[in-house]
Image 1: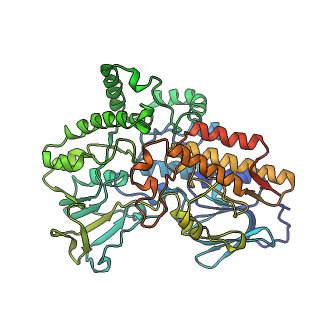
Image 2: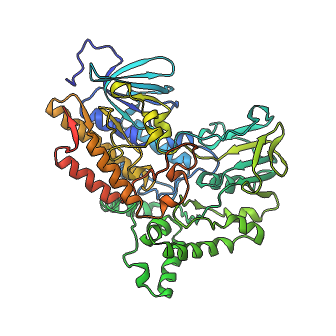
Image 3: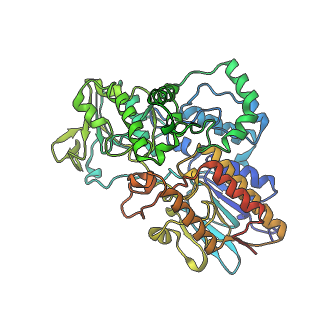
Amino acid sequence: MFDTPPEAPSKTYDAVIVGAGISGLYQLYRLREQGLRVRLFEAGNSVGGTWYWNRYPGARVDSQSYIYQYWFSDELLQEWTWSERFPAQAEVERYLNHVADRFSLRDDIQFNTRIRSAHYDETRGRWTVTSESGESFDSQFVVMCVGGLSAPIVPPFRGHENFKGQIFHTGRWPKEGVDFAGKRVGVIGTGATGIQVIQTIAPTVGHLTVFQRTPNYAIPMRNPKYGAEDHSDFRQRYPALKARVQSTFAGFDYDFHGKPYREMAPEERNRVLEELWADGSLSMWIGGFSEVFTDAEVNEEISKFVRSKIRARINDPAVADKLVPTDHGFGTRRVPLETRYFEVYNRDNVELVDVKAERIEEITANGLRTSAREYPLDVLIFATGFDAGTGALTSIDVRGRGGKSLKESWSKQVHTTMGLQINGYPNLFTTMAPLAPAAAFCNVPTCLQQQVDWINDCIRYARAKGASTVEPTAEMETRWLTHHNEVANMTLVPKTPSWYTGANVDGKPPMLLSYIGGVGAYRQQCEEVKASGYAGFAIE
């Protein structure tokens, strides 16, 4: 049933993929390898996903480059060289373009095509996928590789249309760049993206006003350049690294400290924390003490350690009071890496505004007005994040059996089966969707490659059986949702409002969007489902 007859129209496919980022490119490679007729649709004019759209000043990956890559080709691993430990956006984008060219993936990609809808036809057991321009495509399978952080949020402040200057969102940055020299610039948001923008443009702008709602913990990035000796070492270690990242908590090459925090003497704890801090990576967060996620007292002790490190770098105690987090524990929100971010606030041309104390009221013709005063601006930057996990999927009109709307369904309760499929939507697969580690707690390439491989194997299994549909049962989905919530509620993370819990989107059902049971445990459960012949999935 899966073979496309020769007389079929050119817009009929075995599989349609949406999104040409890390998972979409790899999914295309794998499904094409099976012999399927595949078409990938991308809204941009080139590949890259996150690294195509997020080209704001200072955009940089915070996973080490030697694990932030594909593992499927030894030749690719041997030929590509990373320039530094944490590459900037342009280098990651070049890498993904190299992959697309090296494996001739562009031949099956249609660019400048934003998908508007995907509707399942029960009578034919096929999907009709429609673009915003009105083109329709017929497909057996649909794989949504739209990303977990790709639906930007622009706060609904009054007066956008009145502003005489320039307004940008970091998630839709212009390719031609922006000239900040001597200008009055405002940045709203101090999450991971805001931090990167602020630390990068502060020395260039005439005056920088930072509008902060929630102060964040951040770890100083240590980012050495790589040379020939480093590349030789990585290439020898790649087989071990490939195996290692599949079993750790967050898909990195490091994991939690083996010795429990409470079994250590105070001086030993402090020594370990100092070593982690000096490493200049996310190991301080997801390679330190697991108790940071589960034990409130331990979390508070580690939080105090980090607060003291931050405070020591800020000259003005009143400014430090605004920048040092006290309303949540370290690691219960996204922890970014930074490069002299806190020192930015020691500059004479930088001003910090606490928008909890001064509520933003409107954008005016000449700037931004709070409840206290008006701030004159030439450029306004929204570093206000994304509708994480769900937004990119619900921005497409996805309708399954009986015309069931995914957007309406998720407005009541977000649910998936392992973040891979959704009951009621046969032959629809997802990557980086809610209820899987990839949604937040994973080195992205590690989890996306694992999910793509699982999807690829599932489709191959169904084709070998001569089946026409693959769909998780309602019981399977309920079991996974229950398990997900039980694991989440064993941690401190759901108690902290953040994009992890959907708290940044008004009306979004509150829940931890990402599976926090660990990458290794998740992978094992996926493998067990596969080994069982996909128990819990109706393959008919």
